[in-house]
Image (cartoon, rainbow, N blue to C red):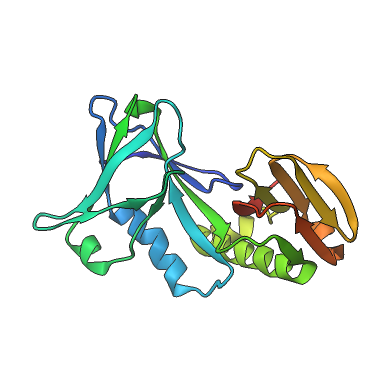
Length: 211
């Protein structure tokens, strides 16, 4: 199934839309996932990774999923937040594998997002640690863009921290504590002068920010 593709230089890098509105089960070509994963695996970015997810909404909740070829079927692993763990497998590519996702609700409202994120989040950072994450994100984005588009890409403005808890949040930056919202951005200029950063709760996602 061919899907409309758009590229956004920000939090979501690549979005597949136009799911089949007739059926609640959508089948996507595995090659659409394999190709960007191949680019990522050829490079070395220890602090970041490529994440696929189905943005969750009332009209788009994953019920089940699998990856199938003509002769085999494998379970599709996903979280309650609907992050999809997509394997990198040459056989699935050569055997024209399909990623089958059953959704509850109006499947025409669903999409699959591809996003660069930090491999892990911490409750405390140094400026040097965040600079390494930001550098890897810029490098991975260049890898995904390819030549020559990477030379026209706007550099990342900073980093975005997202928190899943609804409890009050406090951030302490260079010894000064302030209250923050569940979605908090830190500019690259702030990262350059940062000594220490800590949070009252561990972030759930650390992703790129483009202003």
